[in-house]
Image 1 (tube, one colour):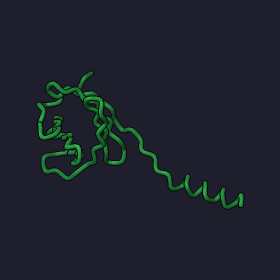
Image 2 (image 1 turned 45 degrees about the vertical axis):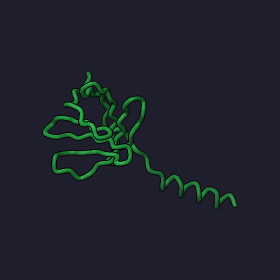
Image 3 (image 1 turned 90 degrees about the vertical axis):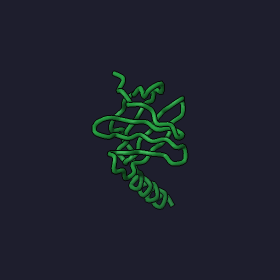
Image 4 (image 1 turned 135 degrees about the horizontal axis):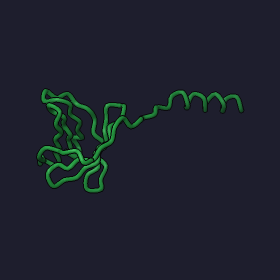
Length: 98
């Protein structure tokens, strides 16, 4: 029995997937201030108005785009500039807060 438990715990550890933070930054997009955490699994977390939105990378002809269709939040990098979209509103150019 203890070998079965040991084997099971080793299998669980081997199957576990860790997600690491690649980059973090804060941006001011018009009147909206957001915190962006880019993860190493083609996703990011955008914190706006105290709420974390998990966005996944999607195909976009405009550049690099992450979105959550359910909460209607998107974050796009186009020609080296960043843009935020939330609930149908497109915010002005996002400026990195140092």
